[in-house]
Image 1 (cartoon, rainbow, N blue to C red):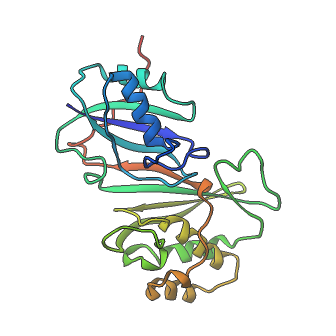
Image 2 (cartoon, rainbow, N blue to C red):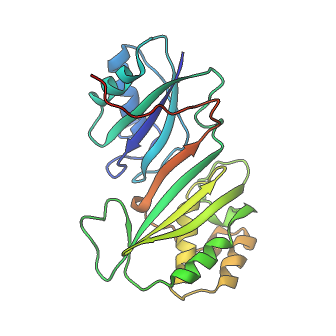
Image 3 (cartoon, rainbow, N blue to C red):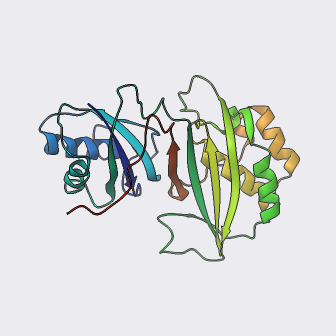
Amino acid sequence: MRLALGLEYDGTDWSGWQTQPGGNTIQDQLEAALLKFTGSPHPTICAGRTDAGVHARGQVVHLDTELDRPEWSWVRGLNALLPQSIAVRWACRVDAEFHARFSARSRTYIYRLLCAPTRSPLAQRYSAWWYRPLDRELLRQACALYVGKHDFSAFRSSECQASSPVRELYQFDVIESDAVIEFHLTANAFLHHMVRNLVGTVVEVGRGAASLQWAQEVLVSRDRTQAARTFPAQGLCLAHVEYDSQLLCVPESKFVD
């Protein structure tokens, strides 16, 4: 049986998703909980391998198991064994052809930026901080330059292992809520550090340090050294992963006696 799990986690204290020798990763913690819950190892595959410090409220994972239990039992059982900063939100049986990574139609990330004269201790785990004024209209114009299918080599890290730098960015919106600016990005897939590098680049335009023409030239250059610095991890959250409804229908959240 193939099982899909929906995960939410605070990535602040974890070394990213992917397993590491020290065991301080989301995948390590989930697979340790699965081992205790089922009595046998269960390798997992995720939709998006988030970096250290990056959060998720819409991560999707799949695993294969011979253990037949009610879906709610997986949720409750695993959550009883996971750290407080990691939670399984739902569990769902899926067909054998479902793949958390390769079946995904799109992924949506949200980057939160607190734009304020002083930093906020209460917001610092879930948003980056910017202490200068930003022109919201210039931000939106800069974001619009990157929507579409492009070679995003200028925004990938040197550690990126993707075979192709071409991605299709469907959405790059600016949402304002008081002093917080949220950047909503949806694409078929993302390169390593792509979101954080894009945000850093449009902020250069928004603060008046660079022009819209420069932002366009960075994209065309395909040269990472031409773009702005990588913005901090804590502002980034994997918000949603989209699948065909025939492959995955997320169960409605409800109380179970």
